Length: 546
Image 1 (tube, rainbow, N blue to C red):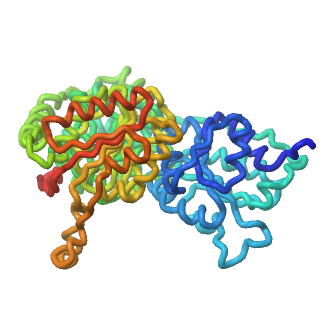
Image 2 (tube, rainbow, N blue to C red):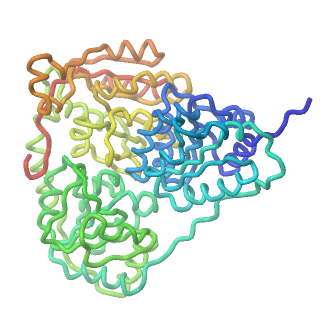
């Protein structure tokens, strides 16, 4: 008997035409089976949250150019995935989530409605309750996720519709090509004039530079105008951090170069950033005139009042500026020597921690030895929430675009593991590494088995200091009376039981070699977990407070 063509089959065919090679998720969702029938690889995770994180990491690593859909069950699956979608929403990551929905007859309270629940954290959310309307809903969804690319997109499909016959509805739909806009000539001229007339300008580059593929143009503009460049946390790697004009990442923790130049700037030009205010983004100086280059006018002035700006695709606008500079005299300034002096002084002050021989090991030594043990031009690294982020960001020097996945408008412990798996799926030619604390591992550690089982070789470094670093100040009596901040576990043993290559290191002198062996294991196709026994490190590079 010939098998019926289901709505799920048509959706899977559409996703494959859009270039999807994987579907991440957790059953039960009929799309996993329909996609597998077409040769699309299912990545079945231990938790829905990690499945969404994988899709998120894939989207970031490919700048939204490629698609890795995520699926969940209706009801409990939808509920369990919410936190990860909220994380992607905070960072505007373009992911496509296709959960099931309750059968049409059961779509009433207290059953949760995915479209309603997810409306605040999605760019577009819709429900398919009729096979005939499904193609049009997916056309709109593909436009949002492939063309607009500014946040999660959700299409919930009623379970009885997903499993119904597709009927005669026309599924010849596809995402339209991206159409890139230029800025007005007047705005370009004014932006260049503000840079040229400024005494101490700074460019602050956001993730919009990465999504536009505009690193080369940004480097050219900085060099032509002699303008130092910092990046936002999400934009880390948008500008090569070994460049003489690089200031580093303007995050909660940051190198002294950021405070010295950003704090003294009279003009700050945000390129590909909404200038959102956040604990995890360095505050901009009140005395500076601010400008922006963004592709969406809704991002102008959202966090600060601005005095000038351009609306258009970042790479297109930067090229407009460079073309105009060809016909004008570029400003004459070269802050490279001052940047080098400040950077050198900052590193000198932190070098005792970065190269510490202490045992348990300093978390800063982990960052320093990792940089020496891997080829950073072929590595993508991400942090996790809390102190690992704060300790990594000021010191890990990115060399290539997307050599780092910065995240942090929302800061959920454990997010980095799934992001790293997504990055490895997107870029199998790169070593994918995540550094997390023991608290973060407790949130998602079982999904190391997902990386093993699904043949996604990554390197996870767990910094184990036996406690929740930084939380004690918020619950001092709970700590004093009950040791409420204490944790325990042998995470290398857990990783080994889950099938990973593992090592545990407590001697700083052995750390670099252990990283190298774990790197070799990953390069041979195995997932590796390195547990590093670290001490609590309360000292953070908090800018001017450091």
